[in-house]
Image (tube, rainbow, N blue to C red):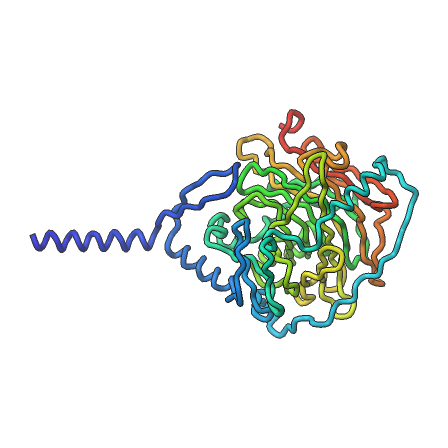
Length: 443
């Protein structure tokens, strides 16, 4: 009897050890009408690696603010933020001197828009107050000398394919499009990424870009799909492994954030999305300086069909004195910067700028995804119905902002998502873009 008890105890110990070493069930719940609760077998070794990663990127906060949307916003001392862990930034001193802002130049052409003046007024009065995010709701702010950082959770990482993939865009796999213009960006991808973009052409003297972007809440069909609207500042080769990209805008990404809210985001890479860079502050690199804007936090309010329209203004430019690439949000707010040390081609200048939308189409059911781009409506639906980018501008070698006189446009499948550009004196160069994804003409 005693021997049987000992054997049972030993067997129980071995079973416990085995289950801890190899796998245990983890339930991840998502706040999404299009996704469901699921179980995932996760090894203890993987959990340990994730915990170690979380300890690395979630810096000790001075205080923490609970956001109504469920986010935890940690107020972290500026000198303790993740950016400075990057090996290229070991000796980096956070830039304290304000960057030299681009000078504004007016470029006017006769109006060719069919929009009414009332549309313009309505859009401008509907603009989002600078920096308004959900975590501001209760009035609490991070103290001076700290920066707000959205806390990363175990569930956030477990939604990704792997720890390596967490916080990263999949690599753009290019394919040949014989109908493409010689100077068009090579964004035709074989990994399900689809675009509707405007681009500036292949100039050798680009030092930044600006636009005001209409904010919507597009529906996402699959958890591992996303919909975003952003600015790309680019240099390097599209068909090689050395593309440098700096990006900012808003996105809806259930996999990255665990919900379906539009969120402010940033991204960077120096090797065509292979290993370097990441979204937001999910790796070292981007240096945040603003204590009121949390990158990765949700934006509120958002636009409604045939009703109030809201937009955000984003500026990315290279400081002519110190060479860092700065991000502005709203009319006058500085969010932070990407240090020049991170880049190869962008260490000097950009060669192309893109504005527009991007979605992931996984074709998980064998059909095109119903994930929406922009508002989910085609460009021809116009103001209040289709999403827009307005007042497209670029920064030149004299650190001057000027309206883009002409842009080219590109969309891989205009039956799914499309784009149409215009010009008038109020909105300068602007465009409507987007679409519903799957429909009778986009099976």
